[in-house]
Image (cartoon, rainbow, N blue to C red; front, side, top):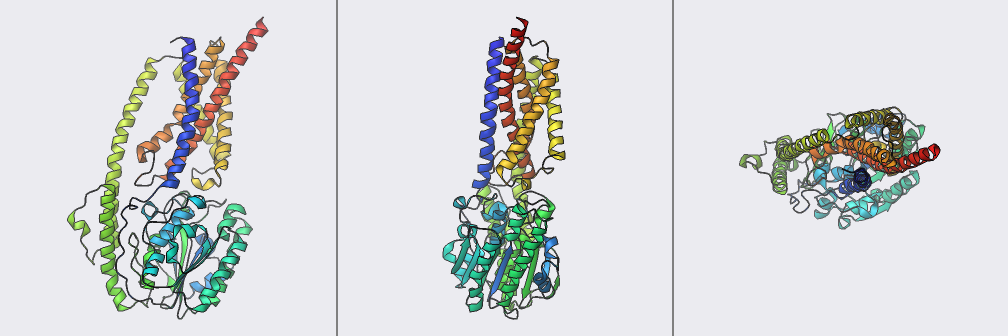
Length: 552
């Protein structure tokens, strides 16, 4: 290949890096915002109600972002401490992604993020869609219960508003907003006319994001104010007739932030107190258990897409009708969910898998659910692994045959780049390969992009000094571009791993978010490497032209 053609080829590939990496990164993000449940087109049909409510009113309080370790601090949250002394409390376990939107979806439907139909990533308000799956408020409305919700305005979009009798929404998240939220809800509690009320407090989450995180004194101060507001709520309630449930939607990492896979983010408080509730610490509760448990307390149907178990072993007030109906209705609901899901993903079920049997537990049905899900994932993954191996063989063959500027040394440079970048990332950067560290898109893009450029420049200086044989501007520019391309190829490997493991885009199932994050970080690097490649190509021409002028 002639030198000029080699140069044009390398230049075009550098431009392709910029366009391709930017486009793919945006599509990966958009795909998460746009993901919909595989049950969207055919949601399970709600079943029969479980009986009569066991309490005059049920108040469901979500303290957004509250960590379990803060929840148990008696000096910070004394009202919750007092509730623990009379109610049932537990550690609650959630799943990835640990953003608010999927957490709300699980709490409202009992379905995990993959099928609840709440957005997996937190979208802008105008982009939030109403969840398509059966939820607590729709169920309460069907049975004629009067419902109220006072909360952050995302709930206005997530919940069908024809299921709400009283509502107040705010676009703010701080202590002033929480004050307004509680002020709006207190008259509903005083009236005694509302059977089910959701109150959402957001200032703890605000402190996590904007006031230093859980290790800051601002965090405890926000938690204390939220606890004071819960105290005001309790003053309007009579726990001999009413029930209160307090939970969170996710935790926060120590520096503030959530969305990733860290254990601290998937451990939340669960506290149930009031009429008929036994006191004591209980076994861990799954976040998916909240909706069916509230359904049992309110006498609703089990939410039709629920993957959780109604936890009634510490509830004394359930009627005999409710207890007798619960096992059968749970089995019927789980059987229908399993059948709907199998049809939605194109899987096959055995007849025995869908038999309605009151002796079968939710775990039995969900085990089959996970089995057919994993079977389809493995089948698709095996095909991608085969394609990936074939691609590597072809690339290896081409590199062996194409002896151009000593590609072995260039791959060595790419390895050095990778080591230096991740050393920077771990020692000076975020230290966590997790979406929890990305409070804003710019906070993810700029530090990592600039680090990629600086490390690329260091590698280029070394290899340019070593490659003294490239005497012409075109040769030096081609070498610079090729160095960038080889580094970009190695940097692309996490993207390829993400594709092999989960497919590039989520369609019927959600990806491994750790791999998804690594793919995003890689694409950010490749974008800046492409930009750096164009700059180094121009710099190569300038250096060679300057060298010629000095010789003249």
